[in-house]
Length: 144
Image (tube, rainbow, N blue to C red; front, top):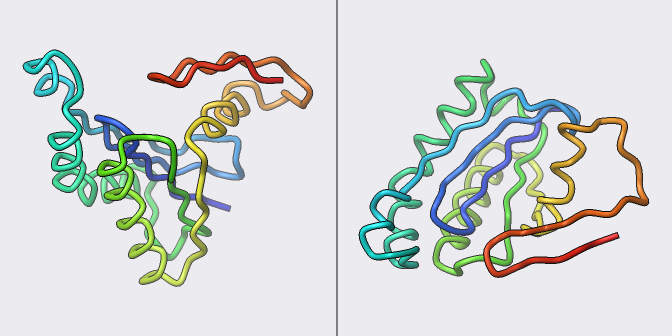
């Protein structure tokens, strides 16, 4: 099954298509890092506005790069927390609308758990229990 993933928790808008939870078929990232750098770090309002500008084209490119349409997608996954609330809301609301319009299930993904689960993409043989360091913005954890 193909899952379309959407991520917008901070200053980068990302969309990817993953097959069977283990193989990345496409991965597209739109960033506002250069603009944010002008202010010495992430400005939440600017990040939210850029997500609103970039999200549709980012998702369209992820689907095109995968050679798929929404008809081929089995579910839409989206990060729902934690993150900059305005940025998160852009991704969640876009994903909700897309999933609803396409008649696909919507899968909420916790941002930090997503970082941990990403290990399965590069290490498909990985099985719990394992030790994992998560270093993501203000959220740093050692998880087992």
